[in-house]
Image: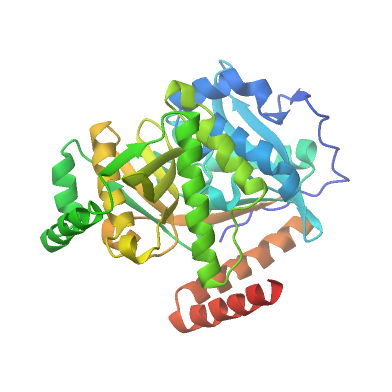
Length: 405
């Protein structure tokens, strides 16, 4: 892992006051409190530049508005412009105190599987990684007052463009992503994704599910439909977590985020969080939520009805098949099921998305934090890839969850 050399510095300057925008020629980055002041530029940049759906304006704003107070961060946006004043790179950052240091990470936390910057096409050929790192450290020291940038889950590239943050160097993330390249032939895609025997079983399961009610796959297209799908998801997850004896993470501010994200942009047909459902009659038997743009749908969460009469029909699998067909029909070229290993991901997706964690120290304290964080990532990766260790950790989590309840 390559760490940026910390620059010797006196006490960091205070971050700009709310609503204040700063631009200093030699520092390079403009620093803006929050995101609304940049909305017009941001929306244009996200369509003309390159980013994942998790860095689109509506997704980031929905997340920050719902979770900033609950998670104890303030949102700061770094904007780097070219000589013609056009945007080159935009970083939406969550700045917080953690373990006695101030860190900056890309907004989204665990809900965003990929923590990319918004970047202009060809940026890597126009700006050396060493220069970008120098500018980032200067912004962290002089304007943000941070000790370390923590840039987790960095893809090496996106839509054929090298990720400039990954060029800093890093170590493998705890998990990898799982993706499926799509084509215009929906039925051909399903043939590629599911074996002949599996498709035969799915047809039988769909007929069995039809005995519960007419089977229908549908996307949420109105606020009322979004609330219906989201309510089904939350209810199904609550039952599942109760069965497993673990705490439900989809509560409080997280629910606020999901509700806000599912309606932000919905009127224009571009919601920050797209919701899909599989129904049997009036009963929603499976749900799926993801972040999407013109090219890709990134899976965020899913659920299914665990009732025996429904679960035996594998409604989650049936929904995924319909979802893949739908993505092909609307012209998307990539679909992913996020990070973290699961059988349904490895069996459906035929490509792996390598990810690295990048730490950029700004101060001596940040350098120490980065070294410790790197060791923590290595320990988590060790556990996740050794079944015996993972079973032991999950058992301990279950005991702790039951004790809390």
